[in-house]
Image 1 (spheres, rainbow, N blue to C red):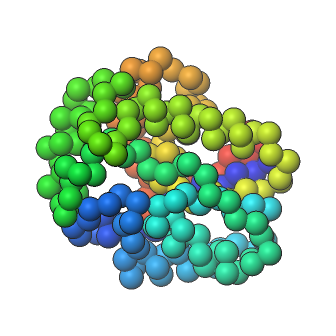
Image 2 (cartoon, rainbow, N blue to C red):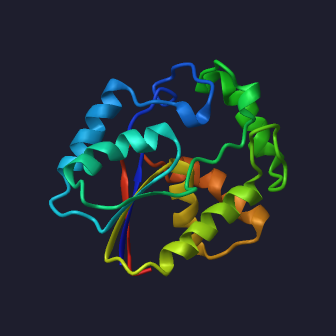
Length: 193
């Protein structure tokens, strides 16, 4: 089985714009162009396309869905790690959230929940691992998943380093954010899971 993990194209948050609801962040004009170019790279249809409930992944997937309309599309819980409470981040930019982000990761508590609408690192990692186990039993030869940078970094870490102790996994993920950045519309390919 070949699995392509694709990070969503450039979003409003990536461009430094003010956002409120993590699930409703849209692509920018540049992101829409990236999504179209991404779909143009596909000469063959995948057996399955997976997106998340988040708008930016659905928008990134749409040109590929339009190109191959007979391919089934499923929505899986592979959405971004929302570690900051959305209610505390209303109408803010990524730069304005930096102090809260730093405080969250400096705490390095995998069971800490920042507030309403947020999840702990433990909840995030469990959610992603459960989805990965579900993927392993599918009988498709090619699956394309539109997801998010934190999910892609975590899966790459999980597959390369194994199921680390939860505290170590959290530390590694934050460290890998700097050493292994994942760009908008980047593709990571996994063969034979």
